[in-house]
Image: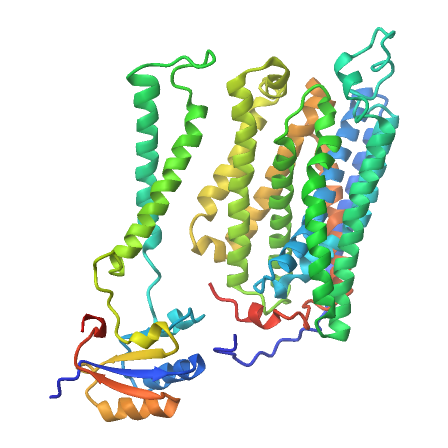
Length: 178
Length: 411
């Protein structure tokens, strides 16, 4: 048993990479993940990636913002020191709409950014998790788990057939920690 | 893109056949409308005549707005260099192509309404601007430098005329592109669209001030123009959605799929929220400041005969799309999108109804054969004209530079 953890196929062209995915899938080789310097339309469907759960986080943060915004207004305008502005009732709901709305949007947006950063290990001070440094530059990477797919020669030949310019055998998952 | 070009076997030269049940229904609709309008106009009851004029204005304005939104849609796609919409552009183009006819119909309606004093009687009546007359109205007299019959008609002609010319030229260029290919048509469309958007953006508020806001000439709101623009844009997108889904159901537009519908759904959803935003901004400022000359607008709509409709409009145009379209999957389903689009088209009829009726027929509001018949008549006319226009040209702009992007659109 080799120490190889992941086999990476490095492609110079996105079409070749998509072709490589098809070839691996046709041979029942499971693909761990793909890394590309730009979004590729249709790649999620091809890899069977589940839809993002970010909208759930957005809803939760938005609902939190609604509650906080309304509580702030209710406490300051109606509870702690009831205010009479223009002869309106001290709980003027139409006036609460803009601020509540803005706080909802603010917390929703900030919460989504924070969730995204947290999920992708992108907080300042955290080492980013990168499997191939050129995936953010000019290479399209297919990563195959070497323990799940033991026929390494087949993986390499399929990747090379599809047009991979380089096939790497990595003993560490993330090269960015080195 | 070309990352995963599948081989497409679409027939882009295919034309829509406007025949059979659709054509018969649209002609029946026009007949119903003519009967309702003639019955209303020859009525001996003055209130009925006034009500018919108010309904003609409502549907004439709505019809023109939806067609103008078609032209706006085409211009916006050009200026933003959008690729996703290229495959379905022929539908807003057909709507834009009907804009000249819609404009003429609206011009006839406002012209007859002015001369018969059935519309705009708040500022167009004898003696309102004459200081020696008992009917003298200082506020209307003060506005008469802008709000007078020749000025009103000249502005209507200039505004709708310029929109119609741009709509005509933009559609013409796209049809020319089918035959000639190349980028010449696209580049010219881009420039013309940019000019059109600037003109359209600055003049539609003034157009709605004239056509609708002046029905209650004492009252004014600077939000009114954007409020009307939002209503126009939402109903225009809803009309595009209805036509796309029905034409697709009839077996055409194979290249338009749920991804394109999803984008149209996002526009419909987003601009329904925008409509509410503008509606609420206008309402809240007036409610909060509580100045009598401003609150009169909402006071009238708060009377028992309008209040339920006033709230119903908010439910249909805001709550319904918010709850029904917030889900991603909902925007990708033909049935749900068709239902919400038709609901929004009815909702914005009600929106215009609440804008127009309190200033024209006031307490003699009605909802009966005249309202429904006029609406059916104009829907029939819209269907007949737009579908006839659509059937004259191929259903896809096959030489559009972003056609390939539209075919591969995926979200």
